[in-house]
Length: 90
Picture 1: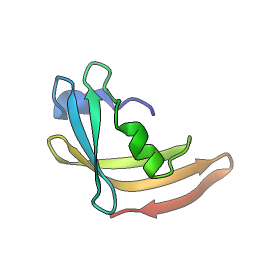
Picture 2: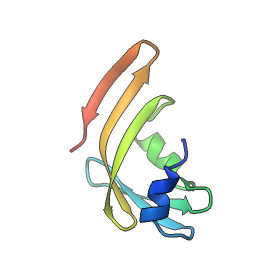
Picture 3: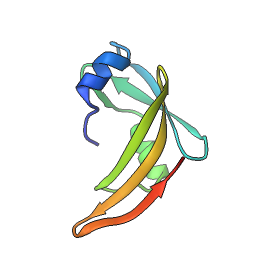
């Protein structure tokens, strides 16, 4: 996983490490560990990605719905010759 956009994190997320919750299209919640200095997710992200069958090249768009909660609103899989499959979660 690439890091989160630092400008967004600095303006919208806590300045200290803590828990961020990811919500999938079914409303299932997945707690993850947010590392503020690294502007990225740690513990919990791997479980989310495995549960949703994410592979290298997948891209997700999350919407901040509460101060520490994100809902996945869009997912796409990129393959070498273009976009393979699109699905809009909500």
